[in-house]
Length: 476
Image 1: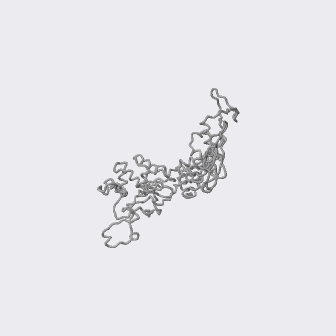
Image 2 (image 1 turned 90 degrees about the horizontal axis):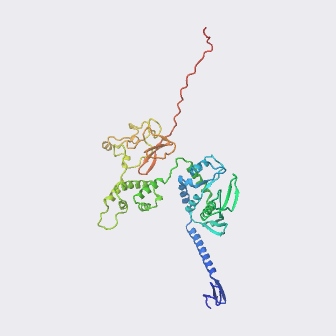
């Protein structure tokens, strides 16, 4: 007996085949074969997704850090929450931005408006998490409506939520165009006539996309851990209420854009750093700033930068290092020159970072005080004894507490409760801490403690009250 498909003899219907086996005969239709192939393909795809999810599970600590960084971005925080006004919409609602709308809700000006995670936030979290199967399939459509099945499946926990979204192929409008006939008419709460009209293809697609996005937001939020959602919500609200919120990755973005203008893409920076740019450290950021200054001024090229780190490639007849690569090495090894340098034997002159708040004024009694910052006379009690030979070679060495090599802040340094938006000074007095710019770290570091006390208001002199002597008799 043959085990192959063959057309049925005498069958008038096309696409019908017969499978003859030992002791049995099976009739197969072509449409059924196509459906079976599609079912097998879908089954294999779903099984492959589950297998990949089991082999590559999520790492929630890494996901938490990634989402926390997103929530600290003011631009993302303004898109991460939604607020829907109830009753009458404010007159300036269309003129204010999303951040101002959320701030009004968080400040307590309006307490009954619903607020929650937006569609964009859920999409970003699902992207960071991975191993989620999100699907939207049209299961029914006729002249009046379109029904879409939306599902979100957690492939690791085998948890799923499904919902059907019905999209009507009609639209309501308060006016009629020329030669336009409505399907029905109703009166709204304001007494105006509202017409029900057939919707075009673009209106149907827009309405369906909005319904699918809302369903994905609701079901995707249910699959996220509740304690992480509470933490992310608190960070977003804190970022929105912070008037001076800055992008934590703003400096990196500006540097990447500046390099891109010179033809150096972030992929080239990753080759130089030998790791992703997301793992960049402050010291590497400071080094890249120095390299950009040299590249933008024309002193070196990016080829010289790569050669200074990885060496020259090609013929062996070339020198070990070109002049441009040597220039890059010199720039990276160059230390920041102190403002006032009198001796080279001090630890600060050798390029070491300054120690903690040691240059406090003895007269003020406060560490890091901005008053009486002049050089102090060293006493035998504060200066450790030195051998006779060393004392001959270095006859005058200042005390570490008053070393002029460490830059000192100006006396009239202004005080800030929070970090200002523009950072262009070397010293900043924020809260009870004095910060100074550190070139090697590429950021502001603690210089000393500086407690702040608000000045007491001076009472204005009151005019003297007129005293009357009631015992004195009037003169006649």
